[in-house]
Amino acid sequence: MILILKSGVSEDQVSHVIDRVESLGFQAHLSRGTYRTIVGIIGDESRLAPESLRAIPGVSEVIPVLPPYKLASLEAHGEPSIVDVGGVKVGGGKLLLIAGPCSVEDPERMDRIARAVRDAGANMFRGGAFKPRTSPYAFQGLGEEGLKILREIGDRYGMPVVTEVTDPRNVELVAQYADMIQIGARNMQNFALLTEVGNARRPVLLKRGMSATINDLLMSAEYILSRGNSSVVLCERGVKGFDSCTRNLFDVAAVPVVKGLSHLPIIVDPSHATGRPDLIAPCAMAGLAAGADGVHVEVHDCPEEAKSDGPQALLPNQYADLVRQLRQLATLLRKQISPLPGVTV
Ligand code: PEP
Ligand code: MN
Image (cartoon, rainbow, N blue to C red; front, side, top):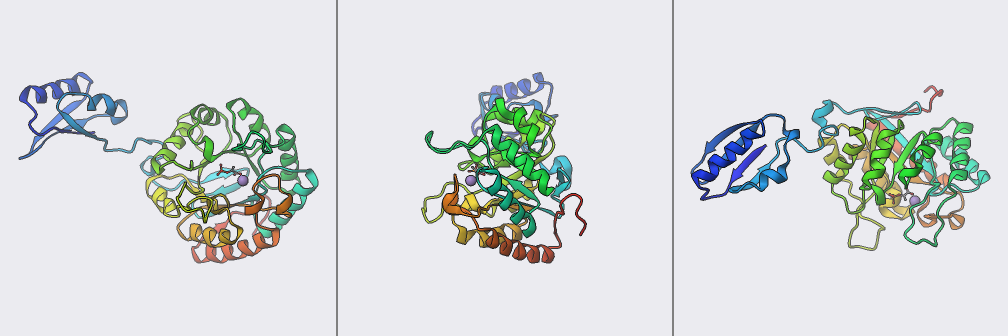
């Protein structure tokens, strides 16, 4: 940590800063420039609270040397980590292709969609049983019944399944049925929920909040990692923008930014980022080209009958076309769509 002192700081204040740092068990290294005086603090930075240092009279700025997300940082691991979700690997050149409807619906429909996306090349099936809806009157999901359907279909087609949890009280329940637990954008900073999924021994798909900075996203990942759950996959799903042409603003640059800061895999979700089927393929390709470790797409066989997010769903044949394009790009990037467990390529 580096403390920059105010210009015109008094000698008494400089001595007090040094005394305070030393009383906290750290070494202080004083450096006097022509205009500013700087105090370098030597020791384990994670034991220091920047706010209390900022409150010392004469201190102007407190600059941490290490990122505050110690476990999520690239330095913590040195190389990109690979997360295993029910035998499907993501990261380190292995791509995750998540597909399925927004909400879990009736078993026959789920069966049709799962078969279609698996045949197209998806390696994880999705569907929400607990839906975070803006309106309390909108479809809220099938709850445990939906989890049962999702599990059954996943087992039938040999695909791991991912589904959202919205309430800390349901984490255990969701973990019983799902291979991966999704934290949605609206809950990215629900710290009680992050702590619970951190305690659960299930990989977590952490979506970026719609108004969250990349630092916020990595700090939320840190909550999960700090509970001992090291299987975290991040997801860029767009942030609030000012232009209503798209549902959100797809922040494709977030992918290489995160890659430079963290070892955690990151995938993109062009469905929620754009809200428009015609933009999903170009944004999925852009995400992959930018270094994403996978793509999350909503697929429905009859969008007009979908219980939620129908207008942004791709039809199964459109999804199959997209996977063909993604496969070609993956080859160019020397990456591979992770095979389903038991399937040899
Ligand atoms: C979803 O995945 O269906 C969803 C609600 O996503 P988000 O949290 O990104 O809005
Ligand atoms: Mn959705």
